[in-house]
Length: 90
Image (cartoon, rainbow, N blue to C red):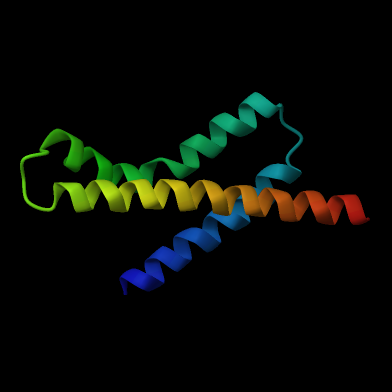
């Protein structure tokens, strides 16, 4: 189940990156929207680990949150790159 949710999160980020690139917004607004889309899910893991570092598995929660944030950014950028390549081809 957790593997399915992680894959769904990455596919959603790639689709959102694709759609975000196609919007006629300023670059600053696109970056703000991208940060708003990426940060909530990793924050669910990072915040408890940062608030209670003495609890067991806090380091594991922090690493999971960091991995989700990094992979979310990578998937969003991959979607943006795919949309850019498709727009350049046509």
